[in-house]
Length: 232
Picture: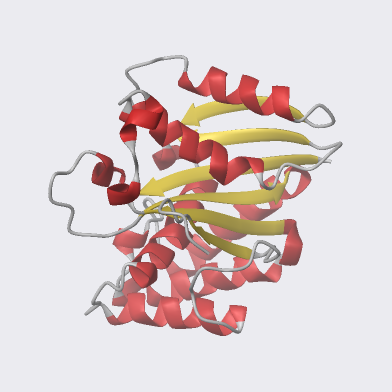
């Protein structure tokens, strides 16, 4: 089976900020069966037309005037069951020992992307992995990530790890939207935007559980909060 993975991140500046206002940086990924990609994109396009809601899909753009659009976007995600899944990891940058990464924060960032992806790589599948385009000091970051994944998983194949501009890729935007809602809840952000509150409540209703760290066996909406301080 061929699987497409669409990735994004929230609050990456926490890795460089001296006085972060939020606690957790999140990396997120949307996993879909490749053969369903065009069908899902068409559904999103139809939903845009229904609500006359154009422009980039983003958590930051959720507003009362677009509330129904975003609520129905949540429904599209859950309607696909295990054919479309979401996984994210949450990292407290204050716990990161940068010397373990050669004091290279960019390298550390992509090591966390590895942690995000590798847990859901299964034997005998082919994967296309798409990340939101960003400027890297080291231009080999994506090719190295691809090589490391392929070297570890001999019975699966990573066909590509590619950077794409999120403004042009609806499925990266959907990943951003789900990740933003998760980040707001995990970071206990005080929300005054009623539409965002309702979106979070709707996700929790569809999941039948609160947005919170999950067990590794959670396969639809998986949230892994990394503890870098050890302990039981």
